[in-house]
Length: 194
Image 1 (cartoon, rainbow, N blue to C red):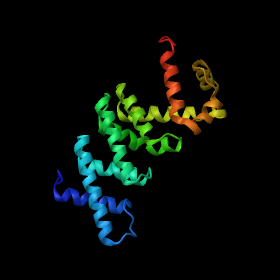
Image 2 (cartoon, rainbow, N blue to C red):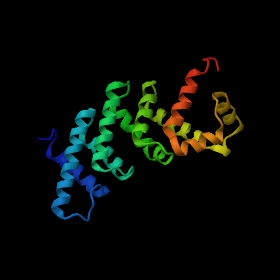
Image 3 (cartoon, helix red, strand yellow):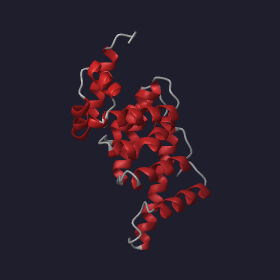
Image 4 (cartoon, rainbow, N blue to C red):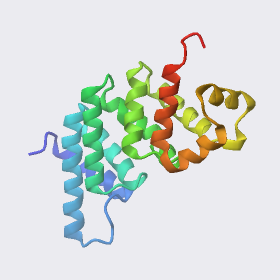
């Protein structure tokens, strides 16, 4: 039994159907079964995330449609977010909001979804609100991918951290997670007065 009313399940199924989460070419019975399974997943995720099933369904729709995830990938991603929220000072709804705001952008910059969630949790754990943390993440990723378009000041900052702007942009294309980790580690080593 699902931990929600039938109207809620119907709303999730309708929204998922309209968003194209399930292949419309499937036979009606298979399509119906897939939509019901989606609603069940949303209800379970909503319970785990301490958010409404409708909000969880909206998040899963985004992951499936915008980020191109399959059902198993979306459920695994949900498990990763749940793990992060259980082990860091960031709630699952906050991480979900960060992924909503930055997921496609981060993916286009070469960051895997789980890395986006982990970076989101790290920024949120620092005390930033999701909208502020999302802006910070986008600005950081944008700066790290500028390469030759970096300003003189941005180049100076990269050099102070031990990096080159062009090399960083190239690295972001092949190992965005590692590049971000190295920049954050270098920042942590900087004296506080700088």
